[in-house]
Amino acid sequence: MPQDEQRVAIVTGAARGIGAATARRLASDGLAVAVLDLDADACKATVEAIASAGGRALAVGADVSQSNQVQAAVETVAAELGPPAVLVNNAGVIRDNMLFKMSEDDWDTVLGVHLRGAFLMTKAAQKYMVEARFGRVVNLSSSSALGNRGQANYSAAKAGMQGLTKTLAIELGPFGITANAVAPGFIVTDMTASTAARVGMGFEDFQAAAAGQIPVRRVGQVDDVAHTISFLASEGAGFVSGQVIYVAGGPLC
Ligand code: NAP
Image (cartoon, protein in one colour):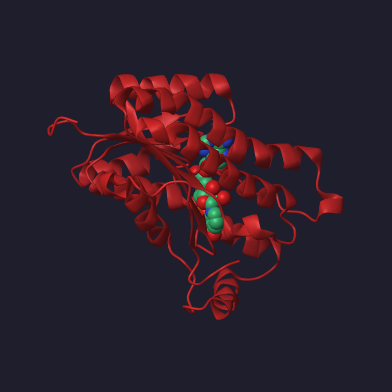
C-alpha cells in the first residue's frame, strides 16, 4: 500500500457500546472508519467523536441482515471512504428466553443479525480485500458460545461465528486476508444493562456479582475489547488467523 493511502475499516453496530469504542480506536490507529448501524443518525456521536479527534469517519445506515442494504452500504463506503480493508462484524441483539418459551421470531432475529449479518457483510467486503490482497475480518463471538442458560439463540449464533471465522481464515488466507473472532465475557454496555433489567437486578449489583466470578475480579469495559480488535486488525497481526480470543478476564473452556 502506498504510504499516503489510508486504510478503511467498517465497524457494524458502531452507534454505541463495543462497536463505538472499536470505531474510535481504529480511527486513532489511523484508519478511516465507516460507522455502520441500523440508523445513520444514531451514528452521529461516534462520527463526531472521531472527527473531533482529527480522524475520518462516515455514518452509514443499514440492517446487516438484509442483503440489499448490506450491498448498498459497502458500495457507499468504497465510493466515499475507499475500499474496505478491515471489517468488524459487531452488530448484535439479544432476545433471551428459556428454550421452551423462545419464539421462532426470537430465534430468527438473533441468528439473522449475528450470523447472517456477518455472512452478508463479509461476502460484500471480501471482494475489495481480495483485490487489494490485504484484509482483516474480526467477528464478535461471546463467552456464551460455550453455552448459557436462556440464550439458546445467542449461544448458537456466537458458536456459529467461531465456525464462520475459521472457514473464512481458510478460504481467504491465500489472498492476504486474516479472520479472527473476539469472544468477550461480561462487558459493561446497554446489552448487559438490559440483561440485568431482565433478571430484576440493579446494574451495579449485577456487575459486582459478575466481577466476583471473574479471575481478575472486575467486569470488562468496551476498551478492553476494542484493544484486542485493534491488534487483530493491525498490519503486524498477519500471521494470526482463524483464532478465537476470549476477552473475559480469565480462561474459559
Ligand atoms: P449494544 O450496546 O446493544 O450495541 C449493539 C449495536 O448493534 C447497537 O447500536 C444496535 O443498534 C446495533 N444493531 C442491532 N441490530 C443491528 C442490525 N440488524 N444492523 C445493524 N446494526 C444493528 O451491544 P454491545 O454490548 O456493544 O455488543 C456488541 C457486540 O459484542 C455484539 O455482537 C454482542 O453480541 C457482542 N458481545 C457483547 C458482550 C457484552 O457483555 N456486552 C459480551 C459478548 C459479546 P440499535 O441501537 O438500533 O439496536
